[in-house]
Image (cartoon, rainbow, N blue to C red):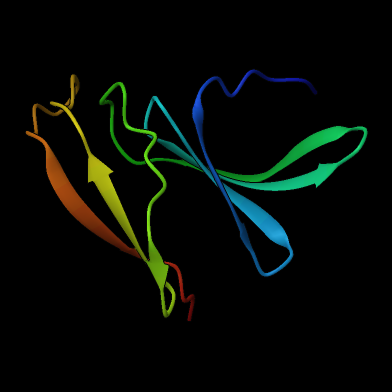
Length: 86
């Protein structure tokens, strides 16, 4: 399956790639010379133009939501997501 990710940031983490798209989707990707495979996807928020590289420290991902969320109405904010698992 081919999909368009658009603009975003890309960070290598534990052999896979973490991508934050401009539409607020967070993707775990496997990248090869032949293309990409989306391993998992989460929609964090509906705020356009939020693709700055989020810092990752000790399994905590800090995402800067640059604008207002068009679905939930939340204002620009800094959000911390725990990626450490169980």
